[in-house]
Amino acid sequence: MSSSHDARVLVAVSDQTPSDYGADVVEAIESALDATVLHKRGAVATEFLRELGPTLDCVVVVSNRSTCVENLVSEAGQVPLIVYGDEVPSVPVDEVVATDGGTDVLARRVSELIERERERNALAEANAKLSALNTYTEELTGCQSVEEVSDTVVSAVTNALGHGRCALVLRDGDVFYPHGHTYDGELNVRLGIDEGVVGRTFQTGETQIVENYQSDPDHARDVEGLRSVVSVPVGDMGVLQVTTDREAAFDRQDAEFLEIVGSHAAEALARLEREADLRVERDRLHYFFDGIQSPAVYVESKDGSEPILAEVNTAYEALFGADGLGEPISDAFPTETERELFGADGPDESVHRDITRETLDGSVELVVGVVPIPLSGVETAAFGLYAPDVELP
Image (cartoon, rainbow, N blue to C red; front, side, top):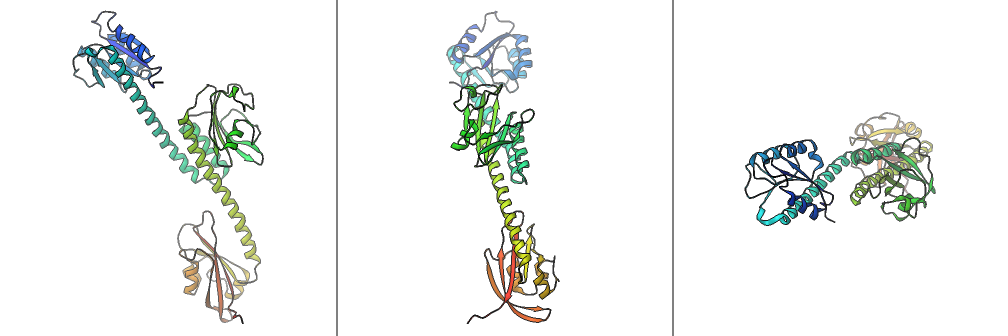
């Protein structure tokens, strides 16, 4: 189907022309484009264009009178304007089609111009949406909770994409629940992970575009005013769904934009899940750290600057004292080996080195082991463990 289908075209003629002048142009455009063609004269055409120009796809001027063309050009704005005549007007227009080609040629050029303009507008709209989405995708990368992710997703769908009825549903075992939505009131719906369009989206891992929800084989609920649905997977954690009361309201471009949001939401949720796991692991390590009998330290840097000696255990304090606690490692540790091991450029895997340290009771030879720890929001983190330098037989 031509993209100029359902176009609205204004055919304008001057006041000095006969009342039926331009009727053949109207007929040719209506026949070729299946368009709505409005036939106006002189000042009426100019006023119509001034007031209703944004509703038009094209203006065709069937007149060589310079005043008529000039008046219409001044009001056309972004609406494409074609002159059907044998003289080039004194003002710039989008195109001039000579009458010796006939109305069939004119109709074809009108169709081509409308198609190009619609493609250009669609591209501009797509670029605008992508630019708007950039703001939200950047926000998603910094979200610190599932609630923040949900709020940002809903904002992106409603503000950047212009869809008003959306829901982000997340998996809880074998059930989906709406975590964020823009529906009126509470949305206390629970669906199994294999139920409805949302279940089909999750099970297949593929975007679903439903033109008529009422006749869909996975129609799970009777919802007044629900006709079209576009549903995209959010990793293995949930589904992002948009609905409307119009049939066949969504196309592949709508789905692609939602897929961008869904993909970034999945990454943000996965990151939060990893961070939660790391926090649990860190808590376990600190529990071990607190109870260990050998001297141990914990160093970290949150902003990329030189790591600091953040914690020492009781055994370390008893052997070396608490001097240096809270200080950068360049000041906290007396040996070059320790400063290298615990520095920002230290090893990426567990290592151990021999050192000689002054203790409260004199110097002692030790082995220091360093274990780097990956933690969210921390550039450098590591535990250090000190043990006597024992020679095995």
